[in-house]
Image (cartoon, rainbow, N blue to C red):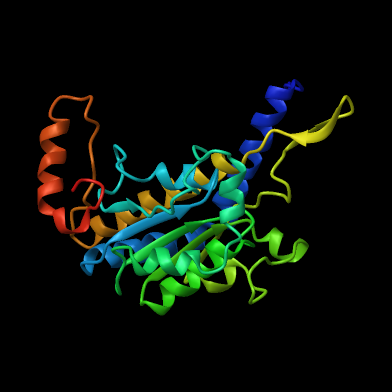
Amino acid sequence: MSDRTPAGQFFDAAITLLQRVRDEEAEPVQAAGALLADTVAGGGRLFAFGAGHSSLAAQDVVYRAGGLALMNLLTVPGVVGVDVMPATLGSALERVDGLASVVLETSPLRSGDALVIISLSGRNALPVEMAMKARSLGVRVIGVTSVAYASETTSRHTSGTYLKDHCDVVLDSKIAIGDAELTLDTIPAPFAPASTVVTSALLQAVMATAAATLADRGIEPPLLRSGNVDGGHDWNGRVFEEYRDRIFYQY
């Protein structure tokens, strides 16, 4: 029997979205995992970026037990999460032309690295410019976005393009315009966003694919273990030492 409470409806909506991305994005997930594995095997470094709430999924794959140790967070001051005051400043910075180029020029990214860019709408200047600039530097780009926005909104980048137009691999989160899954007659606005759940699941699927791909090639994937299990700190210490030139959150 279906649970028609708001909580039950939200879980149903999230599960449906997860099933869609599992079935419809299987090839892009495989391609993204292979791209990351190629980068690791080739001596490159891994980075993830997201602005505002999109940064949550980026942070979820950095310094994470069970995750790839080489995944670093690319930060842009004022747009990582909602800790900036006022919170609306972060949204405004996403629309500033030139900011992404300055960030990348002063970041450790170099040719041969891989960058995951997460932007639900993919329409703002920051993620579009970041993807364009990164590729011009020889960095391979994985974009995680809702492709629907490109057909139903206007780009805020001077080129008129979207994040999806400047990526080596695009992962479509299938999130509907507005990122709200529920409506009620008694509530004037749609509510209950699911983008974080779906985007994080997509990225963890990519990380799992990358790890398995490396193992299939006879390369031990540089994984972290939980510091809350016996031996975890020692394990991680060895990984940090072996890959110290490719990890930027440790030094």
